[in-house]
Length: 109
Image 1 (cartoon, rainbow, N blue to C red):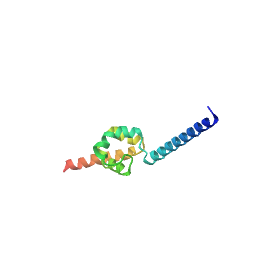
Image 2: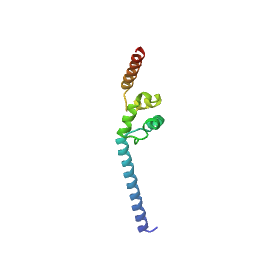
Image 3: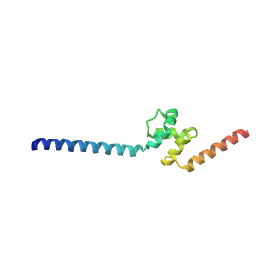
C-alpha cells in the first residue's frame, strides 16, 4: 500500500470513529433526558400498551398516564418503577392505604 492510500484509510477510519462517538453521545444524552431503563421498559410493557401507548415512551405524558393508572399497574411494573426511582415505595404504600380506606368507606355506606 502506498502512503497516500494508508493516509486515506486512516482519515476514513478517524471519521467513522468520530461519527460513532457522536452517535453514542447523542444516545446517552437523549437517554438521560428521557431516562427510562430497560428493566422498566420490560417490566411495564404490558401496562404501557394497556393504558398509555398513545404517549411516547419516556415522555412526561406517559409518566403522568402511568401515575394516573397506578392502582391498575402490575406489581412487576410497580417494583421496577420503585427500583428505578421513578416512584418511592412510600408513595406506593400511601396510595394503597388510600385505596383500602376508600374501599372501606364505600362498603360501610
